Image 1: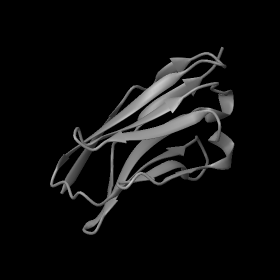
Image 2: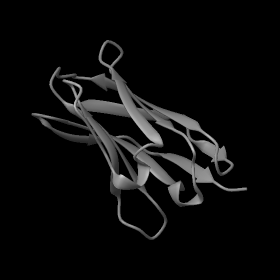
Image 3: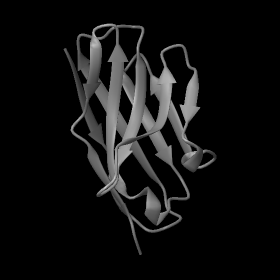
Image 4: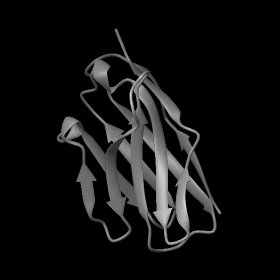
Amino acid sequence: QVQLVESGGGLVQPGGSLRLSCAASGVIYSINTMAWYRQALGKQRELVASILSGGSINYADSVKGRFTISRDNAKNTVYLQMNSLKPEDTAVYYCNQVNYRGSYWGQGTQVTVSS
């Protein structure tokens, strides 16, 4: 089992920045994919960014150039640096890990972009 705990969400003004963190604990397999998803009110959950254990990265078109995903394998932690935030980025952000045993989710952290 893998436990994921997100932190770093909050209220920020348009144009501002936030950094989300997700710490993994439990049974950690070295080969895995870490990702951030988000779900806005009334909408489906969508992939924001993903990073493989080897470092390959993928972003949703809506966040390219504004968000940066990174990971620290020694700390079993993945980060999402979010810059130039827009009101449409408002959502609950979820951390996800996929390894050969399954897919695991964190509890989510709220990000609200509003003036």
